Image 1 (tube, rainbow, N blue to C red):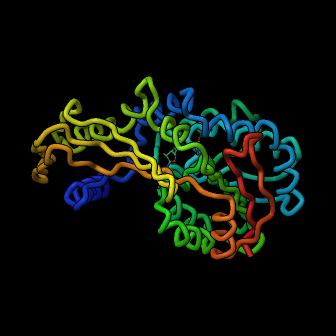
Image 2: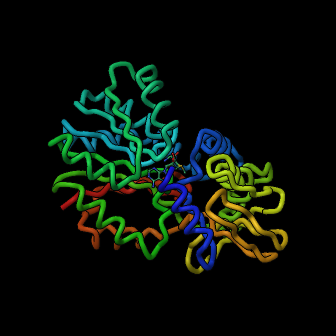
Length: 313
Ligand SMILES: C[S@@+](CC[C@H](N)C(=O)[O-])C[C@H]1O[C@@H](n2cnc3c(N)ncnc32)[C@H](O)[C@@H]1O
């Protein structure tokens, strides 16, 4: 609660204003994200689902050719809708592993602890609530086994491009030589297709963004009027950055509980989230610079999405 309050307050007092997208995910936000994944415009889930439905046996064999006993850690799994296929394939091939989902949303962790053993009988699940790297660092004190880390759904795209190399280096510093990392990357494609994915006709992504203002109201006692803000996504083809904003529809003052008040000019925007799009050679550079070698690339049939398997050197 204190960290949430600090982060919200400092983001809204910054110039330009921003909110951290990790705070989208409360019970309502988790449910809205599941609805986004079902939107016809949100191609990302269907592309990566195709990879996991059709190539999980191959991915599992590649992992098991290197490691047979490991901790399988997933960073930000959501409802694990795609990774479940890989978990099943690894289970079928008789590997010895415990699944450690790490997620900022307590609701996500509770649901996975409850539901995964029903779907995959005998699976060992130990959910960890918290931030990606903080929890991954804590894993080193918990277990001496090798790690296989999943970072799917283009969660990595929510990290600004100029911070990605440092993030991957920090992630690598939590790993040992021989550990594996499987990361999902959304690839550059028709800008209209990309923009539509963040601006669905049913308005679910709009609700998802506005829900963070509601969460701030509920948690900090603020008085955001949600009808005075509008969802505004934009895609810059040259940088590959798809950014979501909430724009203030009028000049207004919002009180953030006992913290104080924030002034908005008409048309002023709050930066909510980046969803970075990549070219395939960009990722190979990231891998090498962070100390990984490339094991395999898994594409969907349209080559819109890539899951890259890297080996920690
Ligand atoms: C966009 S959803 C994607 C879920 C899943 N990877 C997929 O592809 O379907 C992002 C997930 O990551 C979690 N998350 C976001 N930022 C996080 C952070 N900094 N640390 C831990 N979990 C985070 C969210 O709670 C949510 O479950």
